[in-house]
Amino acid sequence: MRIGHGYDVHQLTEGRKLILGGVDIPWEKGLLGHSDADVLTHAVMDALLGAAGLWDIGHAFPDTDPDYEGADSLVLLDRVMEMLCSKGLHVGNVDATILAQRPKLAPHIPQIRSNLAVHMSVDVDRVNVKATTEEGLGFTGAGQGMAAHAVCLLEED
Ligand code: MG
Image (cartoon, rainbow, N blue to C red; front, side, top):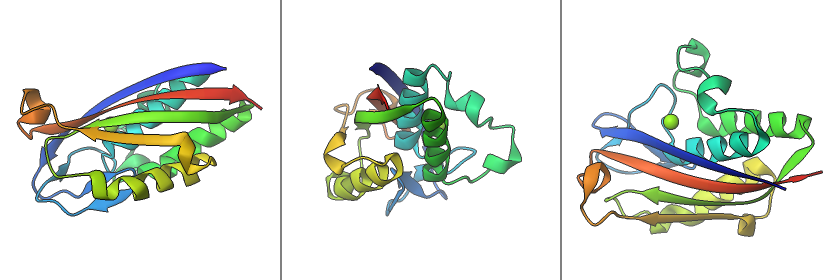
């Protein structure tokens, strides 16, 4: 088995959609980035790539490449899964945490888990997603951005 860790941060700004785990969450601000800025899916992809020894998403999908402008991160996750598949690896489980002061994410967690599970070809109980505030502290607490951590276990086919 192989273990991976991923971490990502995106700035919150007006005039952008808030996409987390492929779910379009109604909110006054969204995450800024070259792609759809889905901070959770980015952290998950970095965990998967890390576990597979495939460096990180910055190298897999360079933000200087116009192909990835506004990219749907779940489609990028499909590409990561193809890379894992070609190395004879599949997902054992993923556990992730979103750091966000607002909005309340609990109502969206089931759909987020379902989206990630479908794209990683695993049962939903193998994809756990949590959300926490940071008690008003730091850049997440101030609502300047969101961060996400993810760990994963990969298994050989
Ligand atoms: Mg990112």
